[in-house]
Image (cartoon, rainbow over all chains, first blue to last red; front, side, top):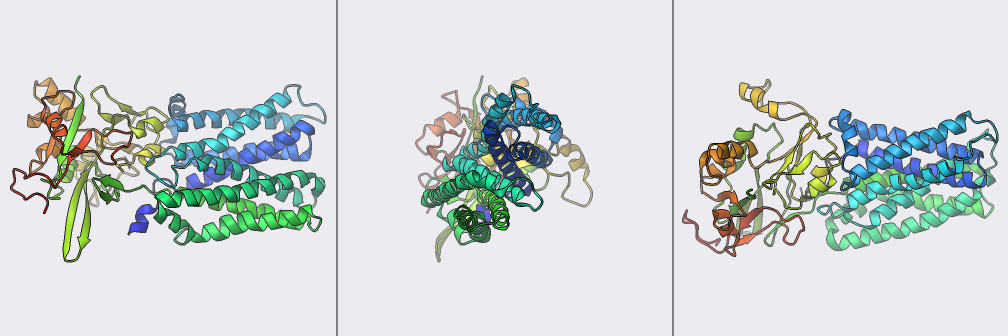
Length: 300
Length: 225
């Protein structure tokens, strides 16, 4: 019974998918746009920006589907000054508009014919992408009644995971057979991903150990309870350790596009598992009445 | 302008959930939605055990966390301190349900009644609840305001007082103006027995509780032993 109360029930799989796709899309966009600063129309730049925009838009569809009254979503722009959810809506809207414009320009431009303001559009896109990846983390981190969310590590974890899954997607796509771009083009991104995987491992360690001090039952649910499978196999195994090993092999010369593809798919699996765990481990902390802890369970 | 608040005397609460039923009748909330409800907890070790009731509802916080997360402005705090949801603006994102540390908010997911078909009461009562939006206790705002228009005093006159308060059979609930230092609620809050849930939390609830262990209640129950 106690573990039921630790489970978060208001948001479900649609929000998990949104968080995953928005992170993945913004990460992929950022990688593509950064690549575009050095070679404006390279395959990786175009792919990152176009696929990134598409994935964020796809994720937004899940977010809208999850709303009780999707037709009212325009009202979410009203409270920019106080609500992180509203700030996120603004960021998401602007990202989508500029991302769509950017993608259309790239899809229609011939070689060397991108407009002069393209770098500005790319740079703005990177900033908005960081916003899209981070705002959900900030929003959850401010929810004081939910110990697994109320953590300043969460936005950093979301940004790192977004970046890493974005690289994973592009590595996997570049590894596909028949692709013209040499796999070596991804080497610097694989190097960057190794750094972000190590950072993510560190962040996850701090995230769980800091939370263990105030919500031991929730952390146990992740490490030993109902979320242990997605955590050990999904986040740590498929999402971090296996890609870390494969990417190391790729950089030290023992790699191949096949291993690149496997590590990319692993990174995506881990990113999805991370959002799943964070969303469902976010149960409400007990209410304190004097010195007695009541687990409040609305709707019963 | 008044600042409405409530005091719940845990020394008087017997956990009958009469408040919960009175709220259901007054506000016609659909299944699964209980604006006012009674949580229970068993404490102690056998055979020295006790079951403790805790009536909970929207705390009408002075600094409501739900209002801060609401992206549409559907949740607002009125001048008289009532936190309410404008179902015209609510898009049903449930950020407020998650942000509320007191578990006071409900998402109205689908229109269904307690029986196979909606009863006449349900047909009428459910009109005020909009599917796809978030609902919660509003301190019986309509009732209070209607009472005020008739010159009645909330917390004193039945017709101007929230249903859970005047229906409490142990007279363990009090309602009134926390800005009026001579109101019953203000006196009880100042009595030294009052506490808020999650002490020290910045939300500053306007629903206070009186400790069960330090007083004899009018009902004659001994002090918490």
